[in-house]
Image: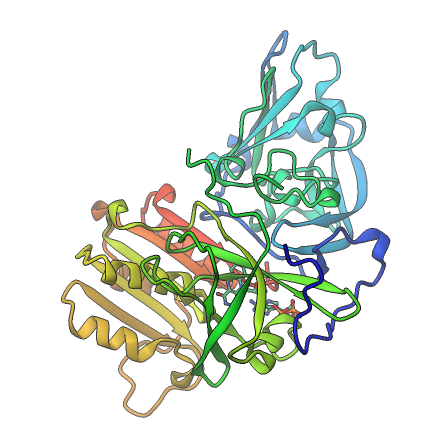
Length: 202
Length: 248
Ligand SMILES: Cc1cc2nc3c(=O)[nH]c(=O)nc-3n(C[C@H](O)[C@H](O)[C@H](O)COP(=O)(O)OP(=O)(O)OC[C@H]3O[C@@H](n4cnc5c(N)ncnc54)[C@H](O)[C@@H]3O)c2cc1C
């Protein structure tokens, strides 16, 4: 529906700057918008840890200090939010999910990221491995602010940004794909911005 | 799980009326053929298409009650905004708009969800809260409800007369305002940004476990969310929606 529809009198002010980098239906912003469903949780670093559980031979746990000892990477990437904004060339520092999964034996094909505040999001394991996802703790050279998901958030830039779960505390590996918080409220299970997988049925 | 909560198809609604709410804000009254209804708090995505095929989309909360057969959007004009200037300056009755929805299953309130209901909004953040207030009134609910609304000035208050009218006839509905910039002579409401003290004065205490909905620009939502949790409210009873493309 809507094929050939034109909005009377609409010229469009914000032309796409670089078509090849902007997924369909997205527009570019300079600021850094925020989207979350509730208050920003504040976990003291002494109480923070990161865990790997579920379908693994042996669960793993890192304290904040141990996490800080893991090799980290700098990532510069474009991000795309389901609420339509995209932001180019954001700079992050984080630990690759590949590093976290090193030596882990698993038959899982999916993961659920779980977070402070009770959020979860589900992802295919292949969407977070092979250099595609990180647990990020710095943004633009500064510690990640709580409002943007600090102390640490998942960073999965090739998917809509709600998949980059804020305040992440661990990954649960699973053989089945279980809808997370937003996914059970109508958002898409995979969330590929290039295929505009925003909502159920897209 | 409701199978088809999310109407993902684009469809065309006709603008059957335009209401000037404030100097900067207009409500568009839409007739959307086949609209199956919505929950108070949900939004639609609006898509604009230029003659050369350029398209852009934005989200707008539904202001009308689910009981209303028309879909009403209330749009605040941002001076350099692409879509909000089009919707407030160009669109008139008879125009058609492409949209899809309703979208969003979390920031919603239905009569059966109970209360007491504490609705906190800034600027156009009042829109989904108004849908809840209208739904509450239309469904005859007497859930105790308080609104705390922040605007820059008296003339920018959206839905002022309707809210006054509703509160005048309903002992369990109270509306509190704060004006952050200009205030008229004799103003007895608040005159500052919403802070913890204001929330403590207006809201129910945590022991009455109010259900809070907070909507507006990110800094307001952050302040209110953090302050409510700091006052002892259960984070799971504080639902937020952030409108601003700025801030954070
Ligand atoms: C779920 C949801 C519901 C929404 N409901 C409503 C609603 O009911 N009524 C309504 O008026 N808006 C609502 N919005 C905001 C709306 O989607 C647009 O962001 C807004 O209309 C601005 O779009 P624009 O194209 O005019 O501005 P743009 O061209 O996108 O931006 C113009 C400039 O304004 C800045 N800007 C963008 N949005 C805001 C803002 N909200 N406050 C201050 N500065 C901003 C941008 O950074 C930019 O500099 C909602 C947003 C969301 C995510």
